[in-house]
Length: 133
Image (cartoon, rainbow, N blue to C red; front, side, top):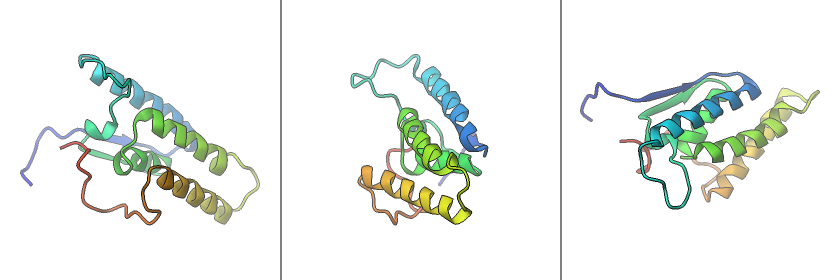
């Protein structure tokens, strides 16, 4: 792969449910990037993976990165799934770490199944065709 000097990067921090603010910021960025483009007839917005060469993060930012980069979600779709994760994983009080892990596993499996993907989808694999160059 040839070296490039104009890479577009998106990075997300951890922060639990405050990840919603990062999703809103990305929504604004996508809106600005689409401003000059003709309206999409289907009314769907572009996906961050169509604009960014590398998307990464830590903690919940890593989870958001997976939704955008690996699962190729739009901001609206990622926000919907992130809210479900917050409700089922972060908001319940007095549950153990293993119970939170299990809740997150169930949420992610549900997302994968809804998208028609295998539940054992590897994170590290060849970049999908739909993502940025």
